[in-house]
Length: 114
Image (tube, rainbow, N blue to C red; front, side, top):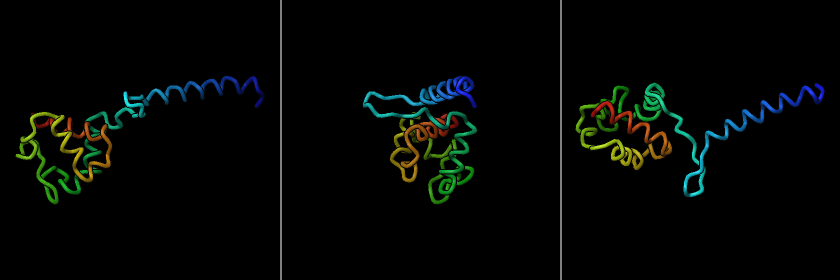
């Protein structure tokens, strides 16, 4: 490929790379964070199925972990999605998911209850 044909290709690659970098932001502490990977109910339901169902059950009925169905005492005990997030963030194995996924799970679980 000659150099005149390579310029448009390189330009497209640079633009795609720049767009990809906008998915990351820097917070006030100077660390880089990415946008939440789980932003839809469907993807959050899949996150739950992949990461939580083993202990809490496919239908959130409990098992190794407590019942976390919408009307369960466990979920009703939380007054807000942020309070539920705090519990998820401190909970093993959810600690390994990262803050974005934990917040998305908290919102998903809380919205069905309240």
